[in-house]
Length: 109
Length: 116
Image: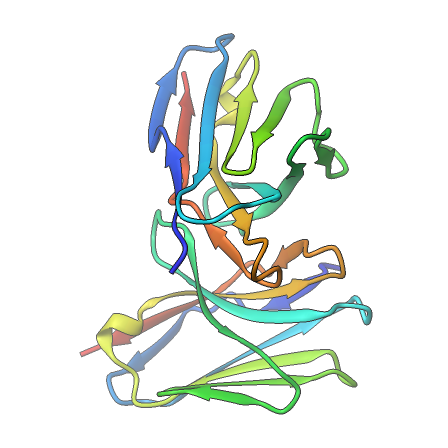
């Protein structure tokens, strides 16, 4: 079983749509949680950290459920520029990051 | 935000040669840097954790004699792929942890290695 699991997609949505990504992790001792965005042939870029209380950054909302070991990302009003691969990332106590295999999003005009 | 650079951004080499990749934190000090590898259509896999002034810690399955890591200063870590073979062709990415903001890792732009 992978440590961090994501649906690979692709999710193909029209501009303006709302799309949700989910992720599960296996290590209950995980301490930090993130969503990263990776464009083709580029390095990953931090989108947002994820907290149990939930957090929102503009059109993006992230949620963490520690009991279910489940992380989500909601993107509202999708833009063409949101097309990318979204990586669910979990960190342990030594700051090591474990990456999910990513969910690909395609936003069409 | 904090900037991490990598050099070279891409390299093509012959099988059997060694390739050195540099990772620098440009505007902050990084006691810890991480080296990742990403094969096509796969996610990043952590190869090793590089600590300034001490030996690197390698993940299971990563050969320390093949992937030499040196972290001689708070702003520079190097990864040397020794006797490279075609199966080592990959996207190598480093990240650096800011001493002042330990929960955050800043990623370099990556180095694309192609071994012929």
